[in-house]
Amino acid sequence: MYRNILVLAAASLFTSAAFAQVTVGDPWIRATVPAQKTAGAFMQLRSATATRLVDVQTPVAGRAEVHQMGMEGQTMRMHKVDGIDLPAGQTVNLASGGYHVMLFDLKRQLKDGEQVPLTLTFVGADKKRENVTVQVPVKPLTYTAAH
Figure: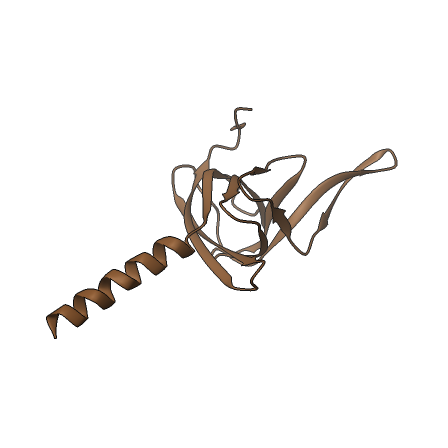
């Protein structure tokens, strides 16, 4: 009986490790002022296999969306996208001026030094979904990420 439990425990550890293919680097959210209702979240995403970021959720906002900044004529505009492709082995930056996560209808002020949970949902080529939850540090209003 104990041997069966150990085999099942070992199998579940192996499965979890094999499925956790996405890594999140240097995540951050800019702090907000008291009445602010939106914020941006930024990070680097890397996947061992080709996958796609398709959803983001957090308890601090009414909704979270994946967005992209881009030029439309002479104007820089932001728009929602259905997802972001992560090619195998390549880092994709979510940064100001490009792809990023927008948090809307903030439920409270986000203060420097706190941690905000974000759950990122990825879909692989095999159509399997993977949720990755990260604790994202809130940085000062004046913070700018190093390039």
